[in-house]
Image (cartoon, rainbow, N blue to C red; front, side, top):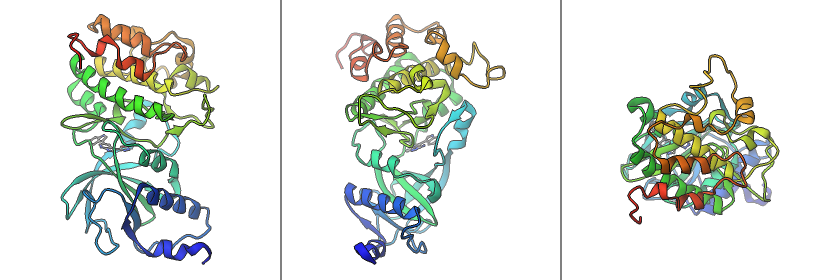
Length: 334
Ligand SMILES: Nc1nnc(-c2c[nH]c3ncc(-c4c[nH]c5ccccc45)cc23)o1
């Protein structure tokens, strides 16, 4: 066929660079529009991190080269009035049979797959952002193999162990702010910062799920569709008149309220039984400073005031919040 597409499909699963992986996902996305759908009998894909995924003679078979165990079905998040486009990924725990390494494997049905999630995540290398190891198309499902937060997400921790100590919150917040600062310096908006998208490992906290992320081209991003999870959504995103990376800072502030009280902002004052949607409340009300824990330190309270400012211009950036004294509780330099 023209453009050598046949050769592209023929070398099944292979090691490659981030650029090979981007070519592959774009090939799949374009093929979806029915141009040259390949024969999907066998798996095909690109692996960037060979320390995790061992490809054998162009093969990487599920339940042979890697075992998948159901782990974290994303439908759990729907309880929190989740409004998400393309939120179809189900996350499994994967284990490569040769390397023995464990990974997170997100399964996205081909018809729901968009290249943007992989494009954005493949271009990010930061210790507090889940690394993408490779992508394999198998049985009309895209398998995204990523760094696994084996400690589960902050939401699971809150649901099982209740509110977190302030010292734990500061430990998580400092790391997620580093990830956000890196993301924002590359003009990427995550769009879904919340406890279930912060996962824990023995030595670090990591941001996951770039399914709603966008790379800004101008100073403001004008949303075509509604993105994010209501309870953590900033007023300017609700207004839908254009927003920027400051939207993630607000969502982190809302997530900190959840970490310290065990509940997202608003729900104690406006019970979900009486309020099916929080968009009007977020739009009209002052920032949810009333939902800050009574025991919250004055320093962290000040931090939250700066993170939850309704005006994104006045709201602190991730870089500015990283310098905040609230993150150095005993005044010791980090
Ligand atoms: N939506 C999404 N997109 N990418 C990820 C992801 C990448 N690495 C991961 N590691 C762990 C978990 C995870 C979340 N909740 C959990 C509860 C128990 C165990 C594990 C988890 C999720 C991921 O998630």
